[in-house]
Amino acid sequence: MTSKVQKSSIEGGAGNRDEVFSISVKVETTSKGKGIEEGSTILVLAWKPHTRIGVAQLGLQGHYNIPKKGQMATFYLKQKGKTFVPLMPNGIAIKVPNKTKANKSQ
Image (cartoon, rainbow, N blue to C red; front, side, top):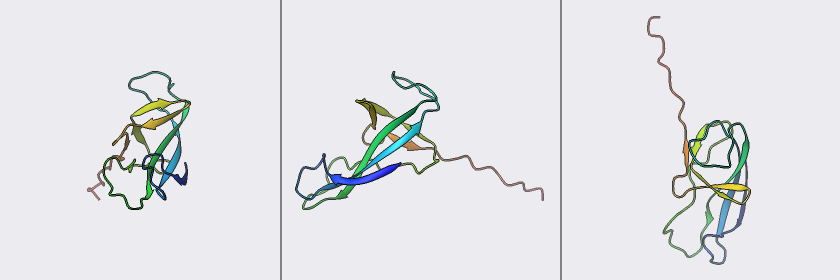
């Protein structure tokens, strides 16, 4: 995953910046839709606001569940050219690993 700060395409005011994340995702399974094959790697572009000048933070404010390297996640996507973007507001759901109970017989 990489990220960069760039001029906001969401809030057009001067000085507004977004952090845009390029996430390489290896697809394990798909539940519906076309164009994504299981086992393939796709590029997902997510964003969150970095700087807002003179703007009340109303409306959608990006994706806040950005997975870290190695984390499993479920993505709800729409295709945009050769890349995919998560649906708003909650198109990324990070999977929490199951915790095993410690052996209490010791």
